[in-house]
Every structure is written in C-alpha cells, then in structure tokens.
Amino acid sequence: MSITAVNTRNQLRGTVIHIRRGSVVSEVEIETSSGIISAVVSTSSVDRLPLREGDTALALIKATDVLVARLD
Image (cartoon, rainbow, N blue to C red; front, side):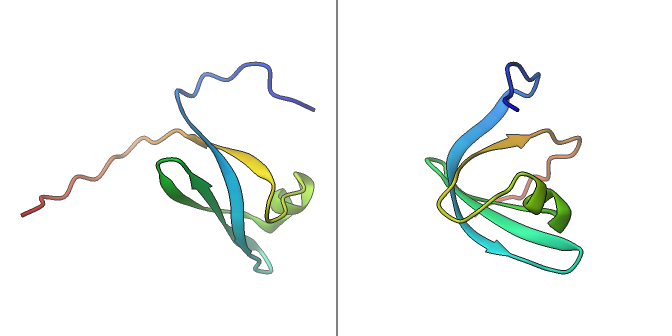
C-alpha cells in the first residue's frame, strides 16, 4: 500500500532512529532535516507498518492545539 494523496500540509520526511517498544504503545523517533520528531503510537501500528530503525518514514502532523512559550 502506498499513499497517493493526503490533506496534511505538515509533512517531514526522515529516518527512524529509535523505537522504544511497549506492550501497548511505543515511542518512535524520526530524524528529519528540522530535528527529531517523537511520536507515541500503538505498538500494533508499529508492527503493522512494519517500522524498523533505519527505515525512511514520513511524519504527518495534524494538530488541533499549538502551545506557545515565551523565550527570554
């Protein structure tokens, strides 16, 4: 299966650098040109993809909230 179109504008291509597997959820770290993106996804999704360290991946970001912090 391949994605032919998606409506998400915030897409970052990168490489899976680490997967911390849990029994229910796992943390996936993707190194992109903008930095490291970390996502918590179900472990069954990691297995279904199947994601491995070193794989090329696409981080699709669709957020309803954006937090802003003041920097000094």
